[in-house]
Image 1: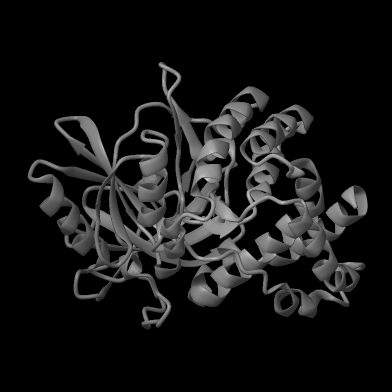
Image 2: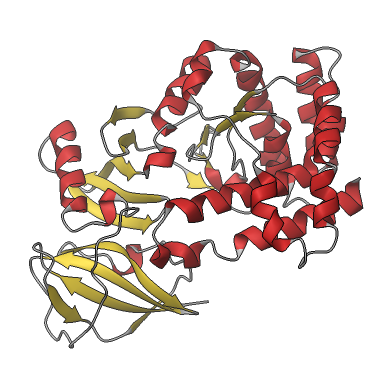
Length: 370
């Protein structure tokens, strides 16, 4: 699947310059801008999307030839991320170069409402990654420090953390493991359970947000659209009480622990990436996310449960995971609703369909799994 890109340009003062003729790129994911990144410009944000056709705004002091007349809504918005503003990428790259020194070439990889990412090279070799996140993900460097203190090497080394959500991460060799199977999922579970067990109750967790479940507000508009949703919400207090009786402690939850957020190299080293979604909560949420793409999640779940029973004798991890399956989907709905509350309307196409999809999945999970 491909994308049709319309690229609209402004100069460093914010003056509209025009747009390139529409062109096709080979990746469908709207946040990925590496396919049309260029040293002459920085992509700021998505202006609007219509199916496969996406319009982006880019800033340049050296406009390409052949620009066509264009119109765009350039009005400011209070929820706009700093890296999506004119001058934002330049300021972030200047900060990165002040830390890393001269000779850095920046290659823009991604920009959307949840992050902006640049690959930073020196002499043809990748030395670091600049990642900038919105304020609701500003705790990510704290999570990296927490995990690294318990299990060095399990997360990307944090070179520096700056203001406005900026961080520099050391380059980690290897491959992102999207679509990996049960063997890798088992390795991830084995590596992370001891970390979670050690961090449970740790004072350092106070810097990580709690995984609050303000679900009724999010779900109520869909009660007359999704059969069984209101009954599920009404039953939630009893379900959560049963989860508490299973005995698993609240601890650091990655929040999006799937194989694509891990990297392995030729030596077998495992690195867990992308900690922006982390919260303090029940660790069963992570095993549910980790195994959701597996044809048979049972063996990996059993291995994970064994780790928790060893770390916390008397707990009932399998039962907690079973009870939390619909709650995990509700938690996803709350998370996506929070994103929509915190981003400007032009960015809503990234997440607009996710809230009802998660709510429907929660009802389905409650019916199938009990």
